[in-house]
Amino acid sequence: MKYTSRLIEEAVEALSLLPSIGKKSALRLVLYLLSQNKDKSDRISKAIHKLSTEIKSCQKCHAYADTTICSICADSRRSKKVICVVESVRDLMAIEETQQYNGTYHILGGLISPLDGRGPDDIHIASLIHRVTEDQADELIMAISPTIEGETTIYYISRLLAESNVRISVISRGVSFAGELEYADELTLGRSIQSRIPYHQKSLSSEV
Amino acid sequence: MKYTSRLIEEAVEALSLLPSIGKKSALRLVLYLLSQNKDKSDRISKAIHKLSTEIKSCQKCHAYADTTICSICADSRRSKKVICVVESVRDLMAIEETQQYNGTYHILGGLISPLDGRGPDDIHIASLIHRVTEDQADELIMAISPTIEGETTIYYISRLLAESNVRISVISRGVSFAGELEYADELTLGRSIQSRIPYHQKSLSSEV
Image (cartoon, each protein chain N blue to C red):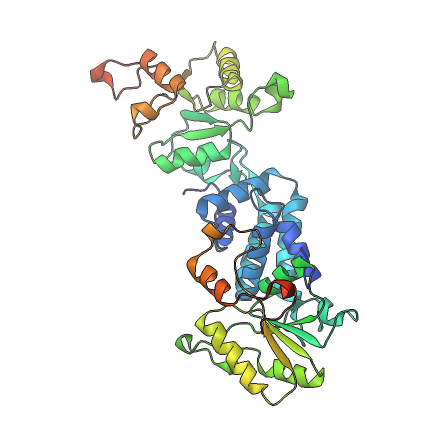
């Protein structure tokens, strides 16, 4: 593409560094910004700048935070005795969206994956074990994908905590509540039959 | 959506000001930036900042430019005698992409549209007339949509220049060269039959 301005070219190149934004979309965004009030560009450029310079990682759970402790860990109404272990901040946000959970989180920042050269020391496991002891946690809820890496990570953590009193649970998986049986994938449907629960205990977390 | 950081929330709000970027996509972009090297965010935020503070409008053709005259108007190899009149910079770029045009451009920045309260003085017509005289232009190529607004604008400009020697042409329209007849819209197909050209003159611009 030929641009009449080097500044436009630079902005297009920069915006197309973002995932799923190609050169054409980037150009559309740039021309949109140029057609708008300067304030809009300022707000976007400042927000991105702050993101890269001011954001911190929570010292307890490793979520992105504005201060050394994130708003969830700092919230006295949330239980420190129950820790939900997730792979990434994205998973934390998905669980927060449900408004069904009132404990705290621990973000591993990855899963154990020997094939990718990622061992237990490359993710936040040591700090999790430390928290379990320090906060005298009652339960760890593993909200981690049921992949080989996920299962390995859960197994590794459970071995480290075998001597402690902490309960370890995993989130239940099965056919989605909104889903029609015929559209569920075979693995999910098969597993959800195997891990069936007695009718009257449906709402209890009886599985693990 | 609940965020663990106010900075993330601000960045999501800011990015979702952009067209076709909703809150979910914005969050995905923000988490991507956080997962990457700081340089990437810096480059994007600087490019957007420069866009809003440093970009100029070319004094001749009104294209976005880094200096008072854009790179096309400043290029001595491009003919000043032929001026292609377009509605927006986007159209200029589309024509530049073809690499078939070696003249200069004039960006109107809109079309005459009484219904939207936009008259001839609200778009860059006066400066076009001035250029035609100053550069002693031979031809104006109207690359403007064949809508009521477009036709009105072309008619208005042609009336203003009726006394001058400048030739006024419009780009040819018809079934796309790559297009199958059956998929062409009725208007285009009908018009392209009406404005048929003798076989041997196919490649000449005989229409206007």
